[in-house]
Length: 496
Image (tube, rainbow, N blue to C red; front, top):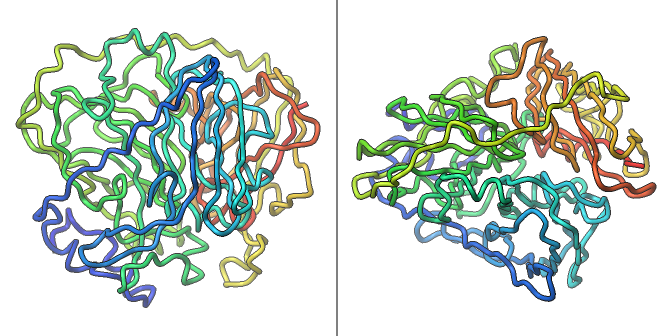
């Protein structure tokens, strides 16, 4: 078996589950059969009376991830995943979300600053055969956001089956920059999702306690819904907007020839200056934008390298390593032989960020992440008593935090569990002040809505909830490993 193409073959025997074609796909060259790269359709809505209107439908579908095998899926305006929505800062948008799934769902606008009643969290349920109509002004700076199901106890299951999509925000500042920006040509969205399949081609979701404890890790990685696709570059300088849409898997992204690339943006938009790197770590819910120079015309493979899983996870890390969860594997091939000159380069200055002074914070809060011992022993029930924030599992009827609008706060996120957790806060883009007493890495110094907190580590983030307040309807904060979120590692806050 080629090491570079190995992906979780050992997990099948460890869990005693019949996985579909693990050996046949990953034991050989996964690019032997060329699979076309899929670019999600771009949907910019329709402007009517000064409002940008999007019409979305949550629907059931069917995909053929493997030849001759049909997989039952769900998607938005299609069989699997949704279109890439696009709007501009200052737009007022109306979104009509029709639910045709046959069961309840929600649609959360991840990364947006918006009214609580429009957030699409667990409180904004869209019942079957009804249409939810959120509307709000786009106040975010240029950024790469996303949208996905956020139904209480069912987020992981619904996202796993396909209920997610990408959302690009533009602004005047970003549109003036000489960056690759032609969607589908040199500006390419990528959503990474790992999945398991039964022998009949159907998705296999949770089937064992370890998959709850560690979050579900799949045997196959879908790139925009395709396994191991080949992307034929059209321009020598190509921008990839990468979303980790997996339920639990972390990736250490880089290229097979170890070429450098430039990181230009993270969750909340452009960095102040590009950061040159050979690898970047990406947790569930996080996004990164990179620009890759393909002027040498050589084919190259986007990979995930070892090191995505924290090295200080102790016994948990050993378990995950033995199950192949931190393996090295290929994601997609890039063919650059026919790419044309871009005639530009990444500018040395991308953006100017407002300077936030920690002395301006008016409140400080501790968020302690932990896992119950019952989790380790297979105990607990399915309603959320396995994962905790401040020793409490999520309760829809309890408000955990009350914050004041337009006031800076500093949150200290403390991980007392044996696993890494990507911590996400709704309705804000924050700044990471420190991780374990050190300054964040250069590419972590932009605006973020999700921060990785490794085991027995702590992160300080500075944030403010701008523009909106609501005395009754809360926003969420939670771990973005979806199985953890669904089982208790989530809380609620009001902005007053």
